[in-house]
Amino acid sequence: MSPINELRTRYDMAAQEDRSAPRTRILIPAQLRASGMRAFQTVVNDLSLSGFSATALTRMHPGSICWLTLPGLESLQAEVIWWQDSQCGCAFANLLSPIVHDNILARYRGDGVYLR
Image (cartoon, rainbow, N blue to C red; front, side):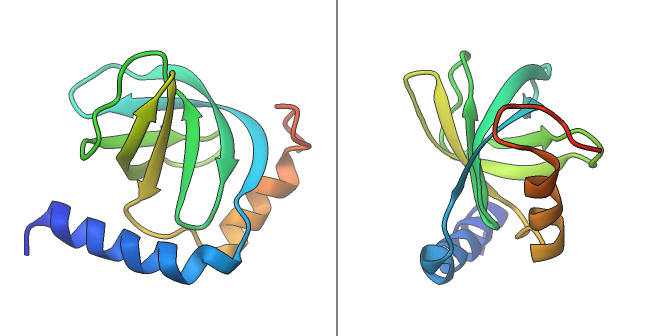
C-alpha cells in the first residue's frame, strides 16, 4: 500500500471512530506549509483528534501533504482533504493524543488569545 493510501485508510478509520467526538470550534493563530511551499500565517477554525480546518487563501490541493505549526508545538504533518472558499480541511498523519488535544483547547478561549 502506498504511503498516501495508508494515510487515507488511517484517516478514514479515525474519522469513523471520531464521529461521536465533537470537532471543537476555536480560533488559533498558526502557520501552515504545503509541501514544497513557504509557510504562511493562518487561523485554525476547528480541531479534533484526527484533523483541523484552517484559513488558506492560497489553493491547497486535496491529497497534498502539509505541516501545521501551533504555538509551542512541533509541526504536525497532515494531508489536505478539501479546499473551498479559502478554507481547507486536513487530516493529521498521526492522531493527536487526547492529552495534547485537551492542552491545545485549554490554551485558547476561542478568540485567538493564547493562555499560558
